[in-house]
Image (cartoon, rainbow, N blue to C red; front, top):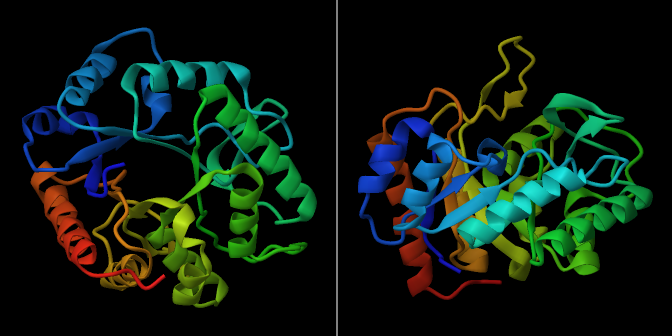
Length: 278
């Protein structure tokens, strides 16, 4: 697995991505945008894959729903995995479907032992369908829920131990959730099983416009310095891991994103030269 920094690939940057020559550069896409039999997007992705590794980061399997993953969705994802051979496949620890109704968001759930069993089963179904290990991403949280049996890091650790999956650690999500719910982001990162972390995401956030004081995971701003600080702490503890610069709104020029990517790459290079403090 590559231990370098990559970018979330946007259609407006296809030409830039094709021309990019930075060593170790990789790209990540949402597979739901490429689940088609053909077309210009799929052709562009195939061309980019000739020069750069890919990661597939799903947003639609609804692993935390009270139902099995959609078999048609899994089959379409398997087709993409077989074609593009991504070095990572990941999905969110959230739900977005209920009895055939699709919600336009990634929604939280009480971390009960029953939820652990259900979600572990869905992760197992995903891994069996794809024939490979997958990573699950920690969510962004905005309001406290009641009814938890486990804290989030305990829940993630239990999923890893039960299913053999790995973790995609979104450092911005950790920062946002810790701010909103009043716990230590650094302590959260320190509680994660280092060996299970297969990818890291870095993104931007913003203030709730309603004046509530909440931070919102917007993916529409530069990465905050506080998030960079947490990132450096994490890779100092666990060593270098594939790191993605994620930007989904107010997407700037390719060169602007590459500057953030290069900053992450410098940190990874430094972490590679120094022993991790696991």
